[in-house]
Length: 262
Figure 1 (spheres, rainbow, N blue to C red):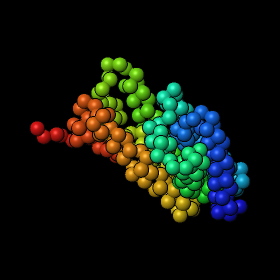
Figure 2 (figure 1 turned 120 degrees about the vertical axis):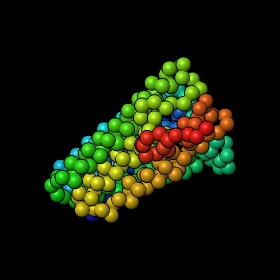
Figure 3 (figure 1 turned 90 degrees about the vertical axis):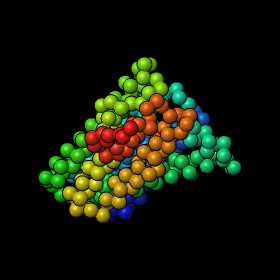
């Protein structure tokens, strides 16, 4: 199967999955469900293209790694947001909608994210449509994937423990991985997708690298780092010591803390 036919197949299954989640969101009156299943979009894609593409050890390995990453992410987000209600972003969108919000949310939220996820998932399609044996670059990609998952999973775990401690209420999380980057989870996410880009390069499909680049742009410029920094820096949400934390700690790439002059 050609790359584009496999990509269109992945797009179709991802849109279908997004539509099922949309139906659940209508029943629950909670568009936030789309954020909780974001990782599962890629699990659906990975196994779709693996099954319809050219079977290979690389394709199977990538599908397994995507599944481990996606299931963990979706499970964590579901647990973290359980009982919290609809995200304020979607509440605002619902209130501002001039038309039928049910249909608006289907097109502007669920289908849009399905399309974005399929564009990001280009390396998954590329790997599944090209044969070839595993090599040294695949080993590098596995190591990079492990580093990314470490930052993402450990960062989430450390933050969850911090927030669960009542004595930390109103203070800034600046411990563990959060001491070296303000967003270890987002950094880890981008590294995971770099690893999938490396798998694509190992399969001879360097042209699939726009997928990981798009994921990086979404994380840093759109829905991840930028949005979180804006929310945390607002007067209503700012915590004690936040300005100093921002001044001393790298926003994205981990590194030593800076000295703040008096």
